[in-house]
Length: 109
Image (cartoon, rainbow, N blue to C red):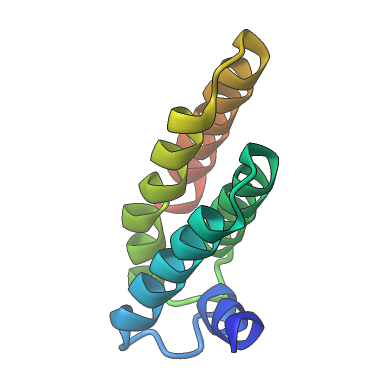
């Protein structure tokens, strides 16, 4: 089901059902907590971030769905911030924020 839900979110197949987006983000966070290791948690949150960012940048997806993805992308970013301990991890987080800001200015203006 998780892959199917990710596909629905990524393609914006049900743009009038925002609960699917909330369910996806919550499930990803739950999976990250359950896995235990910091590396695996980071991987899951990065996957969530990238899926939401790709959706935001996809002009074939309904604009309001992309806007909802923007509202939810801060959840994995907050988790990544919590996990970022080294300067390298913090620099990667800053880069993710910069990419998000740049792409949103282009795709959601």
